[in-house]
Image (cartoon, rainbow, N blue to C red; front, side, top):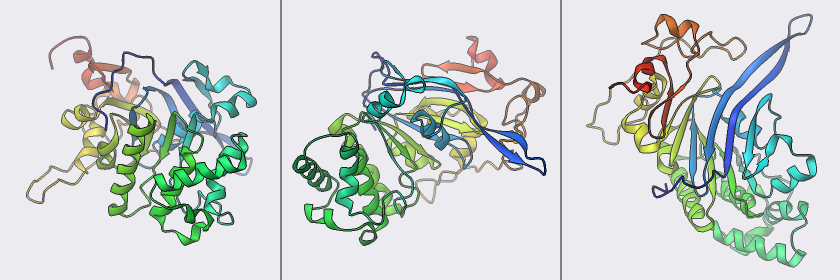
Length: 336
């Protein structure tokens, strides 16, 4: 985690009001329904920064990452990488942009072609983009393998010959092949043992410092995100309900949903007791999200206004914003 970042420069990536709906067909007449996966999400990522995006399964965080890379097309909104409008780029320009924006996938078992040697898999992005000669690509593959903890001899092995953690290291090497500026890390350690998770996180931190990378780090585990993120955005049912610098989010969480997530993080010592917040009910369906605040059906502090009016994003302190009616007065400059 880089605590010395300055946000005086322009962001590397800027997301504005991103919305993504999927069409679902159901019933005997194949009626169209809209799954509201991501709704009006805005955030920025700066050069050399890690922005953590957290939330329960189905909150829309992975869809956000895939949509900004245009692995899924947005319903509305804007996304800018440096000065380029990602969502309006034609296919040729989008292909060129993808050299700067890469992805590490959640499942190291399915993200590598089982029929291809790992050296070929790492070199493949360079071949697609016409980078280097065959000899230069081979040297780059050997360099990347050694950087993530292997030797050049491992290039001739197949994915089944590696453990899950080793395959994720190979996936990281593949993501680095084109020397990107931004990497979307989609739950990159959730499928790994806890002991391996810390090794992969430390490797990502080292690589970020070495190559001045920016990460969008997607996860459901706040304790994992705390280890690597400079800032964190909390998603619930497609909405970005809170954003803050990591330390501020952990010491002063504002949104009731963030407070719930933090209460579920294990205490660092067995003798330290934490009050666990228990939410009532299940997450509503994104097919039929609640009116007003999407969290009001489970919120212990819900008021009548929460059921009727969707809260806007309020900046409570520098860099710390929340979508919650509980803080309307504070956002207007009144005391806490």
